[in-house]
Amino acid sequence: MQEFIQAIESAIVEATGLEAGSFSLEKPRKAELGDFAFPCFLLAKRDKGNPAKIAGELAGKLNEALDGIEAIATGPYLNFKVDRGDLARSILNGVLSAGEAYGNSEVGQGKTVVIDLSSPNIAKPMSVGHLRSTVIGAAIQRLHDALGYKTVGINHIGDWGSQFGKLVAAVDRWGDTVDLEGDPIKSLLALYVRYHEEEENDPVLQAAGRAAFQELESGVDGHVRAVWRKLTQLSMEEFNRTYARLNVSFDEVRGEAFYEDYLEPTIQRIVDAGITEESEGALIVSLKEFGENVPPCLLRKSDGTTLYATRDMAAVFHRYELYHFHRCLYVVGGDQRLHFQQLKYVLQRMGLDWEDRVEHVAFGMMRLPEGKMSTRKGQVVFLEDVLDRAAEEAGKIIAEKNPDLEGAAEIAEQVGVGAVIFNDLKRERVKDIEFVWSEVLSFEGDTGPYVQYTHARLASILRKSEAGALEGTPDYAALAESAPLLLALGQFPGVLEKAADRAEPSELTQYLLGLAREINSWIAANRVLGQEPGVTTARLQLVDAARIVLARGLSLLGVAAPDSM
Ligand code: ARG
Picture (cartoon, protein in one colour):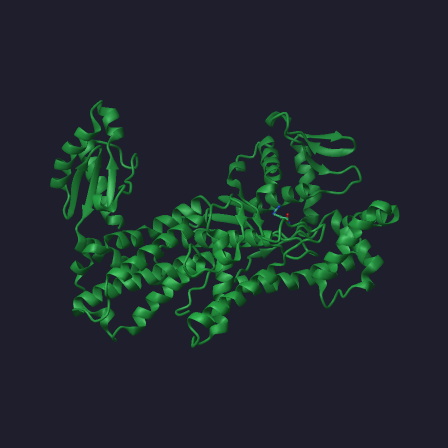
């Protein structure tokens, strides 16, 4: 498709003297108008003319210059229509020759993109909230991978902080009342909740919690550290089970504790930059210059302990030194907006010119019908349970719709998990999500199963076709009415670029939903099998190309594309 766009753009440059790259083609308002549109407003402004008149004049010139592409003036727009045979040949050859690699490119030129994703806190269940970071972050990483960036996915596990002192104190006091080994996360959660219930009226417990964190930070390798290490290990085992189900892995798992040795040098570096102050015994960086209401960044508390922000400062320096990143993305909920703004402000005050490569990729909250989640109150929805239920519900639907399906259990897992992932990536990430079971799993609505089902439908047509039918000589004229679908397939590479640039997987989910709708109405209107051989071949090629794009799109999102369901 790129070849048509290039031909049109250079003809416009030639005819108008506009600079290449100073304009871009649009999609016409209606498919009947043409395949690409060039609005003439800019030109009218430059030449102080009437856009409709300019479009009319330009149409004549361009029709002479272009071969196989018709230019049609429609009001202030100049629309272009590619010869139907050329369009089909070009797009189908492009997709089918690239196969699963269709859409991949080298636009990233090997530049490094660091992605901080998932990053749950140990000793707590991975919440549905962390699901968002995992799923969005992994999709953003795959998108960059496809575009020739070098990516580093880092799981910044929350394994450090005053809460672990509290937890060690709670384990010491009540550890034998729970089944730590058998059911670690639920046990630790119970202890955490109990600590918070009792600490208010129990100064001894409070002191023990504080002392334990101080000991942890002091670096002493004694009892406290041993308990902490155990908690980390038990939690990671649980998290890894969930990651396996989501098919996500990380290049680095570097918890906050990893930066222990970097904390002092980091603080020193910020002090040396001359921007720190003492305030009530604490070490801070004032951020008042960015607004009266911007609170300072706290680097060290008066009791000598460091904070979440200190560890993130250490981490960002470590990442920059190690990778000289082109982008450093933090896929973290919108509730931490201030934290990342502060991090960037500190970098700015230090005069570091790479500050603008650091981006907070924020996302909204996920609300479950069960209500708002709060770990402290013990009101959590376990991600494992959500995935289990999704797979179970998918299993029921499959049993009803396709009772003889082979490998039904595995497919139910793919559909259930896929539905949860797709639902998470469906809307712009900053929007909050209301998780409604019936909406997530439907095979018909705007859902993952709908896209998976469309893919399986295409796979089934290909399975039923006669051997060799796909390799015959295609009669592309049979695809004259299929231009909208062909053009949609041609847009795929551009969609991937936009989704990666904006760190916005919903660009891809929305595209796939639109494509699936387009495909389903095409199938309803076009018989594929049992036509004239050339017609069947052309239509089968289109089916195969559409199947490839759906499968590739789903896989970039982390969703499986089973061949039947
Ligand atoms: N563990 C944190 C939380 O659950 C998220 C960490 C995000 N990454 C980071 N570098 N701060 O809230």
